[in-house]
Length: 150
Image (cartoon, rainbow, N blue to C red; front, side, top):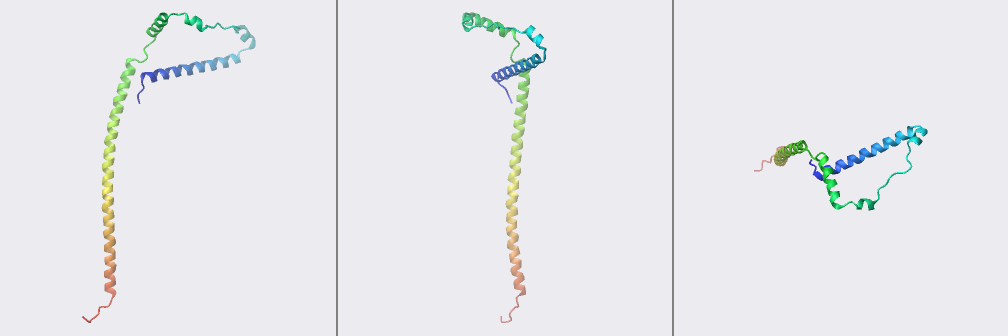
């Protein structure tokens, strides 16, 4: 099973969101366990917000510069080890696929042999039934008295 670069990014973003969600739940639970005096002491009444008009003041160039700087400072999304592991897994999967193909071919050969044997057994069964009816006819003929008129 392989993952594309976009899939890895998506998995990482989902993991980051889940981690953030767990942290928020933890802090919420922790905050509820703290004494009310301490909570009142730490409480902040207003939160500083950034309006979209302030964000839009940034030029496109500065946004690009910030993105490039951020990307340079972060670790690469996929490391060389990840690529080597993916290639090794891909080779392993290809080898398993070839083995499954081989086993499938062998299974088909065995299935064909079984079908052939079943047809032969069916033919022998019909032959035995004919022989049985011939034996019964012979037994009946033996039981009949022979006439001496000939």
